[in-house]
Length: 402
Ligand SMILES: Cc1ncc(COP(=O)(O)O)c(C=O)c1O
Image (cartoon, rainbow, N blue to C red; front, side, top):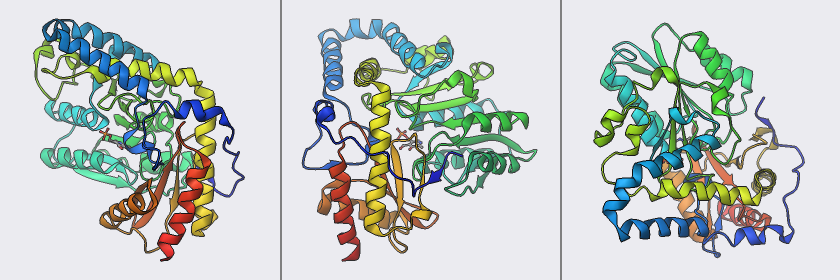
C-alpha cells in the first residue's frame, strides 16, 4: 500500500547548515516561503545561466543555430531518456505534460480506430483538471464518454488496481492514470495498473508530470503505452521541458500536434523540428540533472521526504486536523493536509485562500478543492527549511480562526 497513516513519527528534517549552500543555488525571494515547488518548479541559478549562454549562442548566429538544432535536441533527448531509463528511440521532447497528453489524444483520434462513438475513456477522480479537460474534449469529438473511477485518497495499491480494472468494459479504449497525483499527492502503482489493464486489452496513458526528479523510475519496466512527465517541476529544468515516452507499437501513430519540417522524420525525430521555437530549455535540462546529481540524489530525496513529512505534521497539528484522516506517500516530496470542513470547498474559494496565504503569510502553497474538501498541498525542495513550515502553521491557524 502506497499510503501510510499520517500518525507516524516524522523521521526529522535536517536542521544543520549542510543545506545552506544548496539554498544559495536558487534565486527565490527570501521574504517568501516557497512551499509549492510542485506547481511550477524553480530553476537554479546555474541552470538559468546555462540557458542564458545557449540563448547568447543562438543570437550570435541564428541561422547556424537552427541548422544544427536537431542534432543538439537529439543529444539532450538522449540524456533525458537515459535519466528516465526509457528507450531513446521512444522518447520525444514536448513543452509540457499538457502538450504530451494532447499529442497522444489527438494522434489516437486521427488514427480513427482507437476511440469512436459509444466508446469509453477511463480516468480516476485524482486526475489533473487540465488532463481531464483534454480527455473530455477528445471524448466529445469522437462520440465517446469519460468514465471517472472514484478512488479513496488512502486507497492501497491493490484497491486502486481492482477499482480501475473493474471499471473496464468492452467499450473501454484507453485508460489515463496518474503516476503521482496533483491535488492528493500520492503515487499510484502504475506498473500493476498497466499489467492489469493490458490483460483486459486496454492501452494506458500515464500522467507522470510530477515524476522526473521526484521518484526514481525505470520506464522500460513500467510498460505504459504512453507516458508523459515534466522536467520543469522536480528535475528543476527550465520551464517548457517535458518527455513523451511511447511504446514501440504506437510510435508510428503518434504525430506532432503542429505539422512542420520534421513531418517525415517519424517518432521521435519529428518532435525535434516543430517550427521555429526557442528550445534552449530542452538543451539546458541536462545541466539541471547534473546539478541535482551533484547534491546527491539519495541525500536530496532523504532531505525532501523528511521535510515534507515534517511540514505535514506541524501544519496538521496547528490546524487540529484529525491525524487519522491524513495520508502520505513516504517517497514523495509533497504532502497534503485536509483543511477544516467548510474551508476552500470550491475552486474559487481554494484560489482565493491561496492568494490570501500568499499576501498575508508570505507563503506559497497549493490549495485545491477535491471531492468538495479543501486540500492544502505542501512541497519540500532543497531550498526549504523546517522553520518555513512552522511559520506557515502558526499563521494559517490564526488566519483560519479569525
Ligand atoms: C498531475 C499533473 N498532470 C499534468 C500537469 C500539467 O503540467 P503542465 O502544466 O506542465 O502541462 C500537472 C501540472 O501541475 C500535474 O500536476
